[in-house]
Length: 289
Image 1 (tube, rainbow, N blue to C red):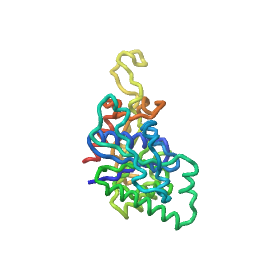
Image 2: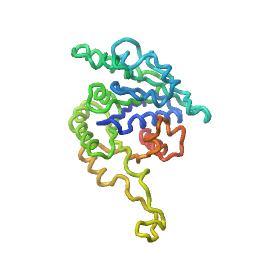
Image 3: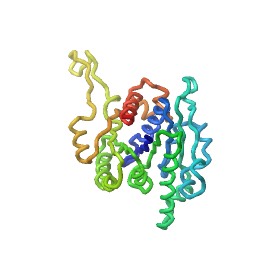
Image 4: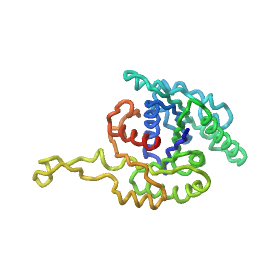
């Protein structure tokens, strides 16, 4: 059954675009056809993960479609075959991209509208966009990367999804904002539809925390290797789920070699044995089950 999956967050910097693109790439690598959509109309970044070849193919954007300047088929950009796989064979599935425009004038076309009638017409087109994608026989999954916060387009995207991942880091602002979204916004949607909501804890302490090696303890005594910090404690996860009323789907440790890389890249394709790739594979299995 076709699924619409949206990655959302209270604030930026939670890694939702990295998660969305890598999940799409792994699904395609395993034979699924995926349409990945950048609905962060305020600060789009999805295109950066696919390189100049794909970016040069973009002729129309979601902004154009919402204002009635083009049709759905005019938006869809073939992403695969990916340059990152040039020396590793091809994927059995495919990725189709739909991108938003970073240009100020294009953002103002849909955000500068004050009249309720015009805004409702744009919302109807956005809903129709989702329906047309679902009707396409060559798409198995639709993955949407939303803008953070409680902005108009992001919140409406949540209502159109089958699965929503509220992505957050372990900072007080992220946690507090996610609780607010869960309690004030999603509570309304839960009563209106069948969308499943999950917390996705990202960049938690783990991978980049140093360990004490045998024979190198601070006291000078021999000591078994152990981490100085542990991943998110079970009791904290349970409390967060209880406070929000939303189950935690999974927790992904921080990988500094990904977070602080100069350029965006698809880890699941370039480094399939990387611990992050294994985490995305786990996420994929949870979705498929």
